[in-house]
Amino acid sequence: MRGDGTCRFGSYFQMSDMIGQERRGATLIVTIDNPAKGNALTLGMLDALEDCAITVERDRMIRAVVITGAGEKAFCTGADINEWSALDAAQFSREWVPKGHRLFDRLARLPVPLIAAVNGMAFGGGLELLATSDLRIAAPHAQFALPETTIGIVPGWSGAQRLAALVPQAVLREMALAGSRISAERMHQVGFLNEISPDPMAAALAVAERIATLSPRALEATKLVLNAANGEGTAAALDSLSGALIAASSDKAEGVASFKEKRKPNFRY
Image (cartoon, rainbow, N blue to C red; front, side, top):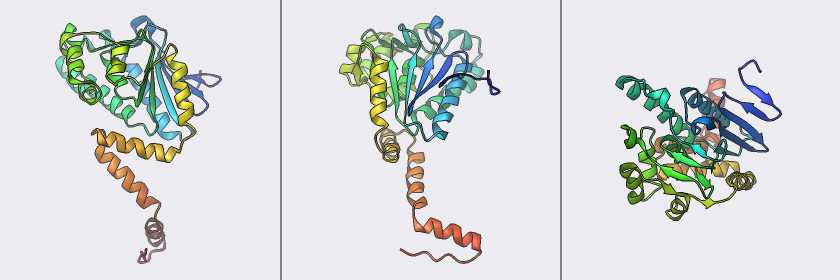
């Protein structure tokens, strides 16, 4: 056990009892590891996933992230009912829902591509988590659903908004309003999945390795533009791109130098 509470075995880090990180070259593999409960998410797991996001934001050697679930049955079946069922209305709306929103927003805006290796069921919050990824590769037996109305709640972690841009309305409403489970084949046909593979992890890692050979700055800028086109972090994208442009200019260098030298700046083309 390390001083920060994580365990390390070679290149493997256990961020919590149920979220793991593994570095494989320039790829970070994040595993949701709660198979006894269908890889359902607890509050502690949400915190650990946010730690993963912070790691990616700070480590420029990471060029892609692959997220998957432990086992072969489930990618993630959503939020652990034992975590939220005891909350009152105020706690549910002011704490639980915003916490998931903040995390999923952060994952969607990672500076590198997020690739999902979908090894089984992706239900509720698990499907909403998938919606934050850039690329999705699923096993043939994977299934997708928004079953919230069957237990008296509604999708709460931005899934309805993101999925509306990724899935045809007919399919989205079938999941959200009729509680239907949609097959991997159908989700591939409608464009939600990039690929169906008998080994989604191997396929996802192959994509990640290819991404690692591409220009990291161009990828980051391209992802910002693609996200902004879908209304994902538009204001932040504009600030980031304009900030990067000016940071590379002689104006920035002259402005900083003049400030430090206590003189009037001499800006020129």
